[in-house]
Length: 295
Ligand code: ADP
Image (cartoon, rainbow, N blue to C red; front, side, top):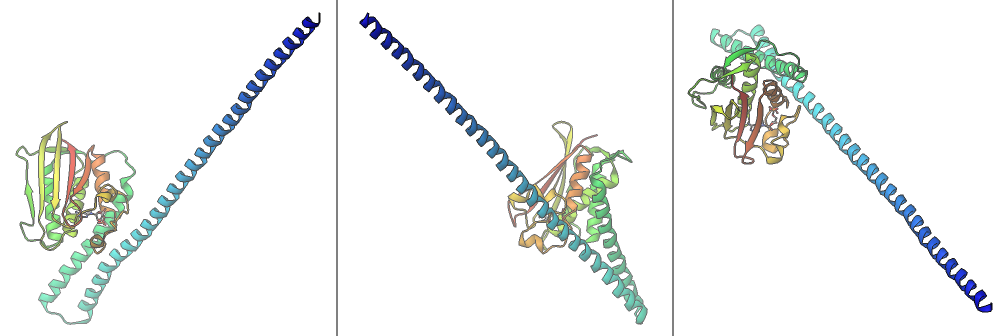
C-alpha cells in the first residue's frame, strides 16, 4: 500500500514535472514568439520609417535642386534677354543722336537685326519648352526629307555664328531617308544640337553631321559629333533635364538656359525616337545620337 502510494506520488510528481516542463517550454516559446513578433514588427516599422525618411530626403533634395535650377534659369533668361535689348537700344540711340555714314548705318541695322533674332530665339525656346511636356495631338504631320531638315538647321547655325564653310560637314545617307513628323519641331531640335556643338567647342571647331539609314527596326540615325569641351560621364543623362546646366568650369563660361536639350529630347520622343549622348570625357568632344523611325 505504501509502495503504491509512493508510486502514485512519484507518478503524480513525474506528470506534474512534465506538465510544468511543458508549460515552461510552451511559455518560453510563446514569450519568445511574442518577442520575436515584437522584434519583427519593430524591424518592419523601423525599416518603413527609415525608407520614408530616405524618400522624403531625396524628394526634398530634388526639390531644393530644382528650385536652385529654376533660379539659375530665371537669372540666365533675364541676362540673355537683357543683353540683346541693351545692344539694340544702344545702336538705336546712336543712330538717332549722331550723324553716321551710310555704311555704318547698314552695319548697325545688321547688328540690331541679329540681336532681335537672338531675342526671338530665346523667347521661342522658352515657349517651346513650356509646350513640350503637354504632349497633345501632333499637328502638321508630313513625310519629311531628313537630309533637307538637317541642311536647313546647318544653314541657320552657320548664319547665326557666321561660320565659314567646312566647319560643319554633312555626310548624307545614299537613299535620302524620310521621317514622319513636324518639320518645324524637328528643325528646332537639330538646330539646338548644332547650336550646342558650336557653343561648347573652342575656336578650332570640327563638327560633323552624319545620317545612317536602314538600321534595325526600320530606324534612321543622325550622329552629330563635335571636338569641344565634352561631357563628364556622370552628366551624360542629366543634361536632358529641364533647366539642367553642367557644373563644369568650361561649360559654365558659356551662356545658356538649360532648355535646349530638354526641348530636343521632348521633340524626338514625341516623334517616336530616342536620343543619347556619348563623350570620352571633359575636353574630348561629344557625340549625340538621334534615332527616329524611318517613314
Ligand atoms: P544650355 O546650353 O542652354 O545650357 P542645353 O539644355 O542645351 O542648355 O544643354 C544642357 C547642358 O549640356 C549644357 O549646359 C552643357 O553643359 C551640356 N552640353 C550640351 N551640349 C553639349 C556639347 N555639344 N558639348 C558639351 N557639353 C554640352
